[in-house]
Image (cartoon, rainbow, N blue to C red; front, side):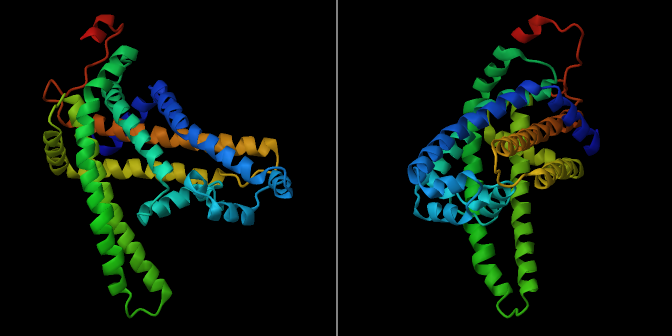
Length: 332
């Protein structure tokens, strides 16, 4: 199977699992909602019945938002003009590229979200690899089986990403970049040098993500218990199928970039009425759904490529669908 065929198969598999998309969207909403409630309370306490509150009802007051963020603490620090529309995406991208710290409460919510994803990942990949419904008991059984295995894998990920976003990031941008632009007098040249370093850093992060993605896929499809063995098997698979794995990752990344670009075109600005605010929220949630679908496509297409390349081994080949499917198969 070629990379293009694997990408199309991944789209098909993800498209046949709308319950997965709905489930991870509910998870995202459940993690975000408590932060939104806390933010609402902070804003209500700060505005009260002042004239500023009436002004805020008529539209975004950027000066007040900046003033509020400067004196706020916790989640309130994030309430800046950059959270409006596509600005939130650019703000997150900037924080990622520059390894910027976030408030502790937001970091804690992010950790909770990651742990929840680790629990669901086994069931999601199992469902996508089977390419047929696994029912609730089969899905959560797979989640439970692989949760603690993926926790061990996450420890390895934390070490790798800690090294990339720590020493490697500091060496690239705090040491190498100043040396590159030490005698540069043209701002454009300095900007291009920084872009090149961002690309180098992005390739390192993408390569690590690719290895850990295939480690998850191999762990689920082959029921591996050793996560170090899964990482080694992932590296071996990517090395033997370098062109296909890298091409597929590039295709999936282009899909993600297309989703972001569409949101950049469709993202509304600050609303001035209940209707426009509702539209803004709806467009934002559609973007979240599309981004979550893209994540599932990543896993589904990687599973499709892996299964097609190792279909000579019976335990890795996806079973052919039989109609009607036997309910007894879910008990295996």
